[in-house]
View 1 (cartoon, rainbow, N blue to C red):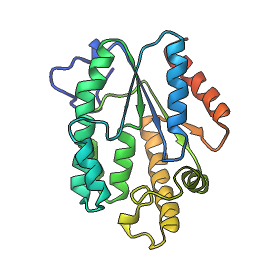
View 2 (cartoon, rainbow, N blue to C red):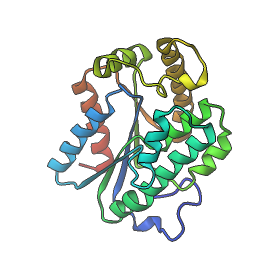
View 3 (cartoon, one colour):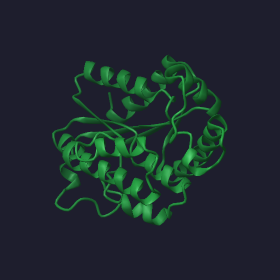
View 4 (tube, one colour):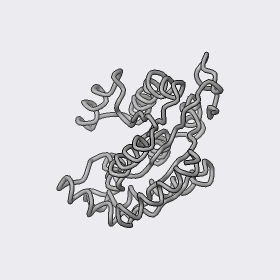
Length: 226
């Protein structure tokens, strides 16, 4: 394995014998469902797995949740909150699991964090340096779903749209529906750019759960040589 930048001091990538698999996508893209299916599939084939994701650090997750509910986070503060959350999980969950030979399934990784920050005007070089500690995954799958489908799925699940996932802090529109559509198009544009840079596997998430799962399983089988 390799780090994107200088990495974490004292960590030797050659000792990380496990696999890191990332699924990216907006809320409503089907990430959680596909993560569950993949975990079941891998464990049924004898692979031990560990799940990680955004806001799961025991260090700052609760504080970040409270700050988000108040809708008062500044851009730099929010970036550093999420970077701290990621760094804590990387050091205390991801790296130990990889050393032990586990398959780490990441329900979103640094790419969502980078896209969010860049869309909000953050300097791209600063963002890259911030996440230079990140390990390069063995596989990154981006579930791409049309904004219209995302709206429908989010309303079906939550009966509302999330303030931050709608980009309401950007002032794109006073109407949360219109803001959501515009914001998700900006995020997808950034993911399309990062797809070229980081070599994502883009998967059409507009299809049925079964169709998406079959494609994801085939890609993971190739990586794991199952």
